[in-house]
Image (cartoon, rainbow, N blue to C red):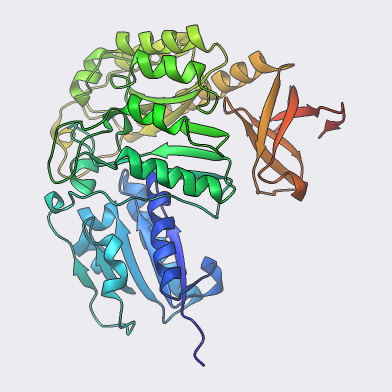
Length: 444
């Protein structure tokens, strides 16, 4: 009797990619494949790529090389944003056998009936306007929390971004399907769901180019709040102009939606926001933060910001720095501007040197650590429920409070995927928080 074929996955990039990789993994399992760890050596390697930055493209090439080191005869498939944007470039990577675009990736199994390696990679990549349907996806089985895809694509035209070219127009799943997926996740024992998409605040647009909103993001949030069996629902990145007061007010009184928002800013300077073609000014952003904090003082607020955008002078950057410094936020995700083909920003004047980009990035990373530490300090001595992760490093495991404070404790397998009431005691040398359990035992 032949042993089942083995498949291994590697995911680069965002939570959305993880949700889709997990869904494709279940398709393989339904067809008799056994999923193995990357280094165990597989018959098929599927690499789900990102292309937000140039570094993500380089990572793809490195992952292919590593896969073939563990299994020289393996059949290598590349999917994801990089595969949609630059299929011919990927096809030239030694060892790649199949490249699938955005409209083809969920039909991967249709293309691999023959796993014989050929001299030239096979490419199936339709124009991005063909990627106009929504495929339900969620991650499960490999993490304490599940990433649930509710929306895909983007109709915005930010001058630096390739995502609309890689994922197509904004489109959404139905509330009925999303609630069904959430119930399936709950039944599996997962305690936290993270809602994900490209532009989830734009939730509700239909498939096949139907731009009419059939539902709103608020209606989705209200429906998910009623799903039994899920303790926590976390909203991933949402645009400030789409994060309405009604959504904020609903989250503030919800038992399932947690007090944590990640809101892209990109720049705190209105001139640069205009160059970026963002759909708000910094004054609106400040209003959103103030609204959240007025209703949820302990709420964690994360911020995306880009440094070194073309036309960003030193004065503009300092304007952003000072704006962020004064804002009641909890941490930053700092991105160094990276030129991407076929985006308007590549033709803008005022290119910032690489060294200056690096200096600005360093300043904001330091600011982020100060913001995070201050946020943690404001929460010390308070009691929170912590959901513990399955990770173990140097004898310690980690968990997160509802408002996204990371705690560390001595590893205990009994705690994995458990909610435990604790008191936050002190910030440790790693920057995480030590806790006191309900029975007054200090965990180091």
